[in-house]
Image 1 (tube, rainbow, N blue to C red):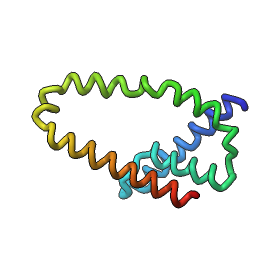
Image 2: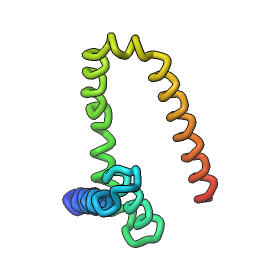
Image 3: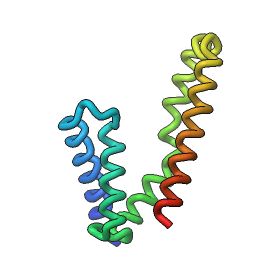
Image 4: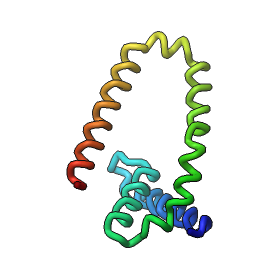
Length: 112
């Protein structure tokens, strides 16, 4: 499908999410997460067909590894602090991962 249209849709939902995050500052979700939720709802309801965003999404996902380079540099820059707070960081990573997996499993079970 048309790549420009796919990127426009992805950016449009991102923009809608950012706007929603500013309208609802009391809810602890970032604009990008609101955008993903809105995109999911649009895809699930059939408002947006998957083929329209698939090509653009594939391109974004192909470069996903590059998005984590700044995190790696930050980890190296703050190595001493990470060593000092290793238990807290480890617990946050463990529980965050478990919560994410439980939410994904619940969503998959709800969806099927």
